[in-house]
Amino acid sequence: MKTSEVNFDGLVGPTHNYAGLSHGNVASMTHGGAASNPREAALQGLAKMKFLADLGLQQAVLPPHQRPSLETLRALGFSGSDAEVLRAAARQAPKLLVASASASNMWVANAATVAPSADTADGRVHFTPANLMAKFHRSIEPPQTARTLRAIFRDDTRFVIHEPVRGGQAMGDEGAANHTRFAPTHGHYGLHFFVHGHRALDAPQTMARTKRFASRQSLEASEAVARLHELGEDNTCHAQQAPAAIDAGVFHNDVISVGNENVLFYHEQAFVHPEAVVTDLRRRFAKLNPGDEFFALRVPARQVPLKDAVRSYLFNSQLVTVAPGEMALIAPSDCVETPRVRDYLRALVDRGDSPVRQVHFFDLKQSMRNGGGPACLRLRVVLNDAELAALPPGVILTNRSHARLTAWVRKHYRDRLTHADLADPQLLEETRRALDELTGLLGLGSIYPFQSAGTPPADTTYR
Image (tube, rainbow, N blue to C red; front, side, top):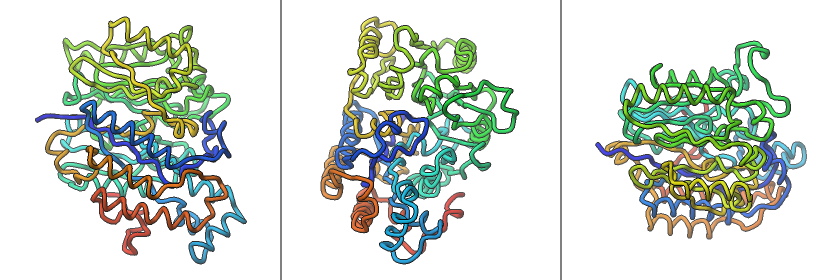
């Protein structure tokens, strides 16, 4: 049966704003307090989706979460009408209001970790929503993520949606941003590569430690996801992220490395003991796929210093297969604006000794200023034809649906948003009208709490 990798991109939400909430994310911290343009952000994301679809790739859409999250504010003691809750939060706890209005759920690389049916013991596609415990504004996302995933991947004979990993911040799980799957093609049995920054249950002195920013991904959470997904010891591999990279602003592994099929594209300072990591990946890949080549494309710091890699988000590019044996990088335009990165990419394509043959640059400035590039905006889901056919057709991007979504954004989104606007009850109503219309366009039914009084409480939305 034919198998495809489907890129599920997160639609940028109507409350896209710059709050500087993500300590450790240099771009987010730098632009905190600036005015944002939600309309431009959503259109930039849709343009990237359309380009990938036009390349012949399978492209799909994940809807944004409803923000501000009134459920969160009410759970924290604010009461009264919706307008009263917003006013009280703005007066008494403005930082809570800003956090509850974050549109960070657009970076769906953090939504979940995914294992395709070819790799799992029960032959189903497994999803584990990330617990995102490192940051308050993201920790409120898992219940809605699970509702959305269950609405899209609704056939439980083919799909499994697990609960997030439990255990608090020490057991932090940040989803697919710290996970890569390697295989000769997407349909082959795959090797799952998990990258962590700390151990939750060991004494701190047993691992290399960060000095400036905290690690977000634990080894124990990665191991739990592998068990939940019924992966085997033969097709799982773990590595530690380099503390110096985390301290430089590499808050997730997908800011310092990216992989696709039989290629790992990585900075030489990405991992603790990088040579041993690559050797282990080569050995495991060869054991699963005798005769198939594994490409480890190492980017030296002398050519691209760590600060340039973080500034440009070179490794937060998408690496996609456009033809057998030929791949393309979908990179942020910031790579062109960073001379050493631009020169490196030109040389990489020109030398022609790897599957990476094309580089395409995209203006994603609205997302980039908050610390999310092309790879942050997508969740990779490998599906066979039968699994793909089981999805609601409305989530698959086509020329027609792209035009409809573009019109929807232009109709509902503001072109300027500041922190003061987040307390505006009118913004809440605008957002609800937009999302109510969107769920109809995507064929998802009622997935938001405001749409149905019968929506299950957060602790019962998983199975």
